[in-house]
Image (cartoon, rainbow, N blue to C red; front, side):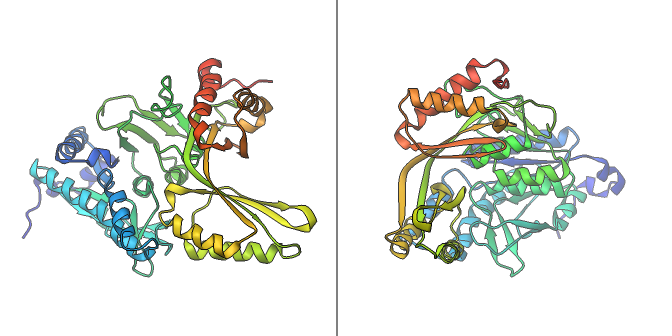
Length: 429
């Protein structure tokens, strides 16, 4: 029989009075035994500070990519269900190793899979969405003063099938659990100390942001920034859960707070985001068959489980229906076989362009001032960078351009909008 810690016999009211905090650690934080030990020390410090701690972990660095490569060694089109069974194992390995490390340091801990933690999803394999959380075993572990260590990125459908939440889905697990547990905060640990105004590997003068709004952070994620999964912000907004992005290597660093700033910030460019590998699909339907062709294309994407971003259709010459779709290559691990099938299915009226990147201006009310768009177009024109597409939202202006010019565009935008304009927030009248 497993012995219970002495704290398990404290009155429940005393245990319940301790605030809950959710800590999420990414793949680089779990890369080897030394890093796992470092993570365990951070967890112990949070407990010593008087918190009840829930931990969510990602698979070890490069492990998911290794699984994908091995699956593709057998077939370019592995079944999505089996991919979920394969890929979800990485997070369970991380959870078990951290639980072992914590127990070795005298901290009672239990590893839980996503399904054991009560993460209920729809049945969309490889890109599922959380639809309900039943954290019964998480509450039980906390009540007994154990640290529940949850494998992120995964859940279980109502059909009792293991599902995964898409690349970066451990962020979604962490924030969803924090919201369901009404946690004091959710700390997301990675190898960078917070959210930066651009990728520091591309922009030398990229600066750490002290805070950023939910909407801006969500758009940064959608635009390719890998600091935080955009789907996680949806859960944070529901109960105004504060997210704190921090570095495992510098756990006492200031990091960046992601919180509700609605109505408190002026139109601004707060960051430049990029996505290196995107695919532009341009399609033209036969005259008079636009709706039929569009329905067939949507059915094809649904069947293949293809994740797309911007989708737009408009009337073309001779009554034809023309459209374009942006497909993130990184988030579709069956993309080569899907595009091969599509090119045969839709020839000759479909063009696939695979040499593009997306570069985005991110900021609250960014489309309320034409100056942001005019300045960015002027910069690209001066650099002789052609654009293959332009998309906007309330918080983003995205340019599609040749991949070989991506770094140049990111650096030029950052220098003009972030480094030159005072406080990064002033719009031109």
